[in-house]
Amino acid sequence: MSLAVGFVAEADQAHAEVLAQRLQLPLVAQPDLALETPWEQVLLLEGEALSLCATGRKRPGPVKADFVSGAVAHRRQFGGGAGQLIAKACGLKGGIRPSIVDATAGLGRDAFVLATLGCRVHMLERSPVVHALLESGLVEAEQSPELADILARMSLEHADGRQWLEQCSSEQAPDLVYLDPMFPHTDKKAQVKKEMLAFRELVGYDSDDRELLAAALQAARCRVVVKRARKAPAIEGPAPTFTVDGKSSRYDIYALKALGSD
Image 1 (cartoon, rainbow, N blue to C red):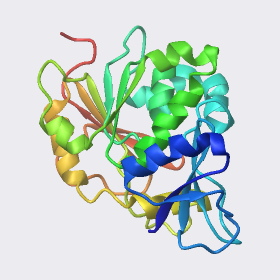
Image 2: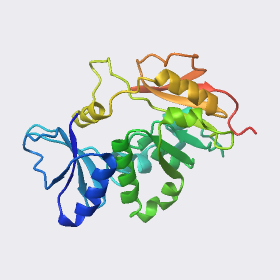
Image 3: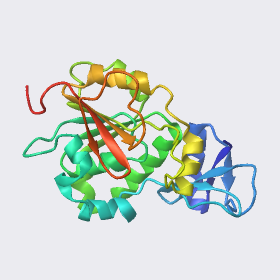
Image 4: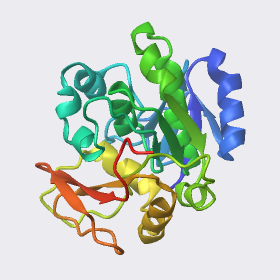
């Protein structure tokens, strides 16, 4: 998919130039997203905010890592705390708050929820474009003092999750590895927003999910948690120890050792 870095204000030009050079992408000034352009999508920089914008008259909305407003903010305030499915899947109860490596961080939404609930989460993202979006979202969130404690529990690294896990030392080993690999949806009834479909077209799918799971099982001290669509098959390999089911998704849990044990 053709992609460029764009900027609107002259004040953002220097930052956009650095980003374009880092990502090895063309740079375009003040792009008109409504027009058909040589680029199907534009990484648009406006101040500190970076968003992935489709082009064309019938384009979907922008995609960004947003920890301040919208669905993520609503979930932080009204999401049900430790009663959420993800919290149950990750074994959060009492004082148990495992250290977590999110090896497929994406836009960081699940990592943010887990950090909100008190876990330290190290995020790994191998796509340089998605990493840039996530990095921008974290910088923007730093302007909100009420998020300071949550952000202090989150860290981000541009790395291939599989390679990182395969090379993980015993000192680096987390209590829990969290995986949400991107895979093709076969359920034609699944409601996927148009903007997220555009995002998936750019990022592609994680074809090495079997190897990723194997690396996670090798690296995790206590548990591996894999998020899947509710009707999707488990990743090829060992069978999950148990599952936690929701309406549209489920969590496959691979229990290695009791959380909270030495």
